[in-house]
Amino acid sequence: MADERILLEKNRILIGCTGSVASIKIPMLMEQLSKSMYKLDIELIVTQNATHFFDAGVLPCPTHTDAEEWTTWSRRSDPVLHVELRKWADLLVLAPLGANTLAKIAAGLCDNLLTCVVRAWDLKKPVLIAPAMNTFMWEHPITATHINTLEGWGYKTIPCIEKTLACRDTGDCNV
Image 1 (cartoon, rainbow, N blue to C red):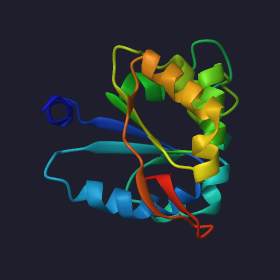
Image 2 (cartoon, one colour):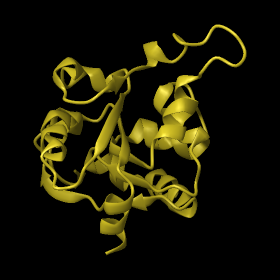
Image 3 (tube, rainbow, N blue to C red):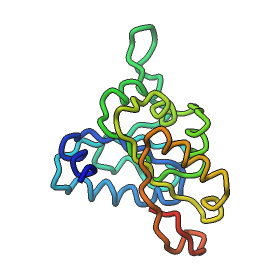
């Protein structure tokens, strides 16, 4: 019920898409969200590695990439994209969240637009994470440490599902 309340009260959703193979599902996710019974205002941040899996140009929502980060800034008081996106959004969804970006976030690194948004995020606003990676990456002990770190900050994890992976293994960390 609390998750439903978030969607009813908060309609500005910022989705961060990372370099997981599961990013191929982003166009389908955007299509489904655009047909939602909720009035959703969605923007998407795509990491450089995520661009290999789909054409962001055909999506029904504004899409942001690393290349845009400093295009609007030339002097003090100019808007900074990662700060503006943080201010705009009511909810941050990291889906799919690959192992590399998970590790960056847990370590506090901010070397691209998405990780800068995450680092600047107001932790009073919700963050949902949907980890998606190879089973052996998921089962590595450091991954549990990273997930626990993010959950300790208040992030909510969307549970993984078991299925056949892109590499043809059967695994349990997919969205």
